[in-house]
Length: 123
Image (cartoon, rainbow, N blue to C red):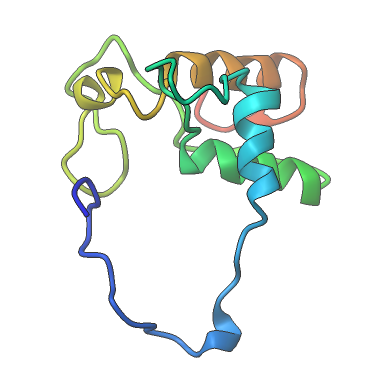
């Protein structure tokens, strides 16, 4: 598949006992409850939360405290990296039809303002 930073494996690299599967309800909650992303697949708008927001959703369910580092989405710096790995920059994710980082950034700010998370990198 295109778009992955590494080649997708065709066989398991670990024993099956080490594999965990995330309940899709967390993805749905991140998208529809937290980000208000429509489940209408015909709208043509970005409909998928990033892995980071899905992880935050899970953390909010499992952890007493959630501290974040590395989230920021520097939309005013198009050359800024999106991840700590790879070559993707903000200019590529801003144009994404797969994710909506504007909505995600607003969500992260609301979590911070509501003291639901501790921001270690000053969103």
